[in-house]
Amino acid sequence: MSKSPKLRRNLNKLSSPVSKDTFATKIQEESMGQHNQPYSILGFDHDQFCSMKARLDGKKETFFIKSDSLTSGQLKDILCPHTLLSSDHINAYFSMLNEIHDHIYSLSTYFYTRLVSSDEVYDYSAVTRWTKHTNLFDKELVFIPINLDQVHWILAVINMKDRQIQIWDSLGRTRYKATVGKHLRDYLKDEYKFKKIGENQSAIRSEYGDTKKDGGKPNYHIGNTKKTRLIQINSHSARSQGNIVSSATQSTRGNSTYSNDKLEQDEDDFKVVDKFLRQSGPQSDGTSCGVFVCLIARLLAERQPEEDIQKVIFKDEAADEYRKTMTLELFTFATRDEIVVSGENQFDYESDGFHMIP
Image (cartoon, rainbow, N blue to C red; front, side):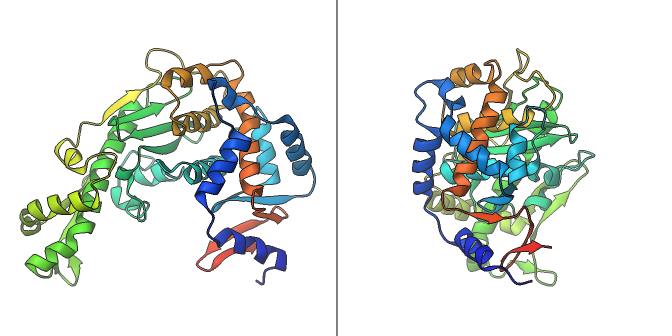
């Protein structure tokens, strides 16, 4: 299907390199602001908001936030206090946070459902490629938005510096803390081991010859049990990795936020922390959980003190206020370079770009 000239122009912009510093500076200063007071994160420019609202109420458009997109209708849905945010909303917002903050990394809402099946079977092999171009251990924070039972959003945060897996559930429940924490702790161990093997296979081949056997398959595999999958290395490679791995990790990951040597020694030292263990959560309705996930992630990404985070999220009507703020942020981010397409069309991503689905 041929694209219209306007669509081609906008999609060309989408695929062209964009300065992360430019986005961060403009959005933080003009839309997000510099927050001297914790509550100011809930504020927004009313003139800009009215201008945005008028545009959303006008012609139908599709707004791109990196590779994610939201239609005019979806942006307006955020403003409705009775709307439960969808994966599209949350993925778009976390894509924006990824672009603005270098020290964080956000995984998609679909990540956890691939890692852990509906019957609680953990499968690392299903997500090995999700971080192909990213080293999570170089980040300060890793955000994992999780949808529970298709009705409730929570935020899991891997804090590399403090070695914590934090569970932020706006309803204050502890039901899922143990299982989510265990699966993410297992994921960290497997992710480290998998990346380490990948980085050092060439070194092992160099010293010990070709490590592939059985028709070209590597001599390591992901062993499967009902509850966990762990990287296993054959004894020859395992013995060889001692010196090779230590030198390789020191040279390639010396600036990591979390020491890989430390991780290898203390694989289970990531403590699972329930952030509302001694109190009920800030959510008082049945639909604002996704808004709290976005708000908490935003505050953490800006390195706000936890005391201030608690003040903001427990403020009366914080979720309703932040619905307006986050809608304006997404709108401002997408329209900064006019990455917008007329019409609320569906798009399918193919190898050579985005294509409208008639």
